[in-house]
Length: 136
Length: 308
Image 1: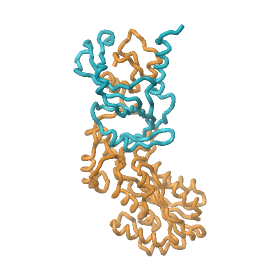
Image 2: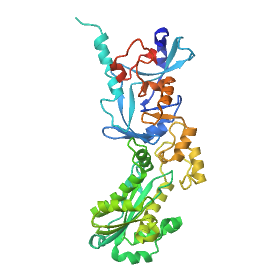
Image 3: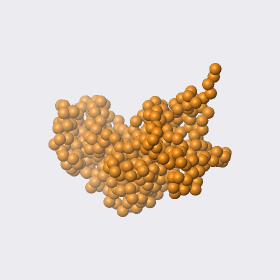
Image 4: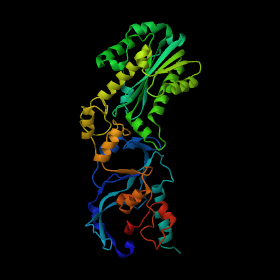
């Protein structure tokens, strides 16, 4: 029930200092939080074909595409500051970087409209419809 | 040997071929198949075919082509020159299978193993010779696997051609030796001048023979390991040598098709990082049993910031 008792605060002011960065959404879990040589390894070997991008990571073939954030939205990469040990305490996160598009990768499967992250972009429009102001 | 078609993009496989000698289109021909670079953890595997009229077999024998492994690099280069000079009756073709192709094929969801890759490559090359009008009557193949089955497979695939599959065929049949020389020369050139697609600046070129047992290769693999990406595409990720080093010195990477036992996976997911936001099994409601998250959100892996 942690989500009901503690609050996560976003330091919105940090958006101003945040850098715009290329973001890759990988189809695997990498047990690493920190810098990585993305441009040297991934970007340098990525191929742009007509309908998809291709690359390999750790010897596995990936296919992907670029995806823009929904209109009026900005993507945020958040980083927790002063991470507390207990989940009862409030948490604070700051914006470490921002993005307006990302490249997502599937394992061997060509990118398509059923991909989770593509479908996730439906939400803003739906949210607007159900939460937005009602016009008479 | 002009390897530029492969070198312009060494992440994919490539076929290179000599001119087809006119005489090979009119006379009965024999063809040899051999490979180079099956074992190494570095660089491409090269499949080679060499063909000439059956009537020229003796001439080929007299040119003293021998199994490429028993020759020095310089001797191989010389013999390749000789083969090239005999282009009026000897033709060759190569299939360079890039290390990236080897890695991604062997590690594919539906595994495509090295034997299948090799057989398909050999079949492609024979078909290429046939499509080019070479009058094939005899095919000799070197193999590392069981010869009988492979011979049967090739005979069925190419009816009317007499197929002989033999271990050590490269030392028994001059036309196979010739194919082995073409393949080995190409592999040596490609490995020596490997053009790293990664943006790594000056890469140490002391990688040795590429065989996992070579101390130089071992030292190079240890030195070049990147904790996140592992290796450049020059390395065959599917080789246990590379896997073991990445397991011990690199960061762990989990794929959704990993063979991981359920308990371990569950343990890992309880202790998740921000990245788990994107992982396959991140259901929406495990942290808040009183309120079911609607399928709309779980299907899209959308979560409220508070639940991360």
